[in-house]
Image 1 (cartoon, rainbow, N blue to C red):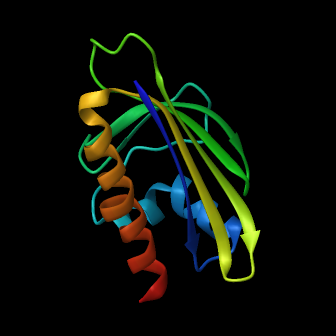
Image 2: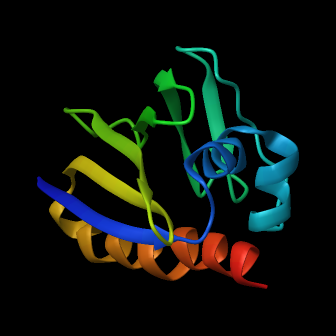
Image 3: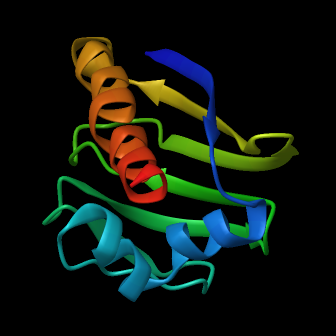
Length: 127
């Protein structure tokens, strides 16, 4: 099991980015797909037609989101994703931390964060 942590600069205010990460209508705009999302702790979520799915753990409006991401039934230890939003002169410093990533999925997960999740947000805000 491996952990991943990285910071990305997103050209949007933290409150605006938080809405983009938690509001289904806005998620649909930047992902191009239907989404299931609720700010209710314990609720299930799904993005990109279940490519990312899991359970919401906690929310701090405009500041952080904590989720458990599913890797299938064989995952003995939950993979916890913590997204923290920090004000930055260029918008938001988006801190991503994901724990307990199966070794065989690590490279794919990191690529997914960079090339899909963050790239989609950047495309949404830059265009």
